Image (cartoon, rainbow, N blue to C red; front, top):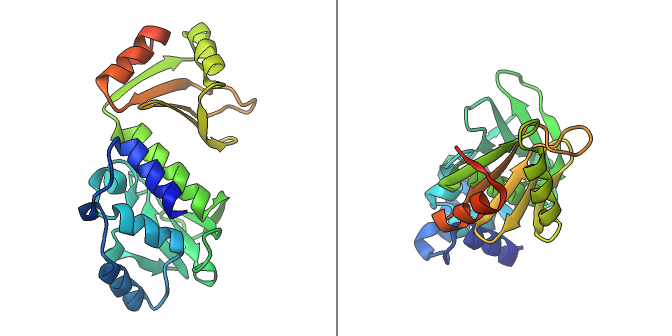
Length: 217
């Protein structure tokens, strides 16, 4: 799991992680002592690799800094939605399980709803979404009802790319060198409203624009 998380984060950043990107073992230990619980191994790895890397932690959704992790309704809260409308956490009784159920609590509601993904898969998906929505500077879109032919061409080519997130009814993300192709699927699995391309570099985005006529946002 450590190698996979490191691979995903470095792929998205386009560089090797450095020691200063992560938190220290002492900081993780201090958090566990304060909370009175152990963090799941996958969360420990995440914080150790990139717990101080701003793009990873805070460019869109807001990962809770390790020193600010807290318990709410017997859930360890580790992520807040970008506008503060909900948080995500895992139950205390699954705290040592990397495959723990992830729960979402919409504010000001006090009810927690189970997500479809377990902690490891959820964390990987959030990382890709973090860069699709804010981590990459170059973004364009194609729109259903206006660019259907271009959308069909992208999705046909996407069969040869890597599907990195696949949440039926939620989010689909493909990886192509330095570019994330992503959309929210409709009930039939097609593109609901818009198909997006988010690129790490201007050159990668220009290629998508030239190939498929993406419209810059």
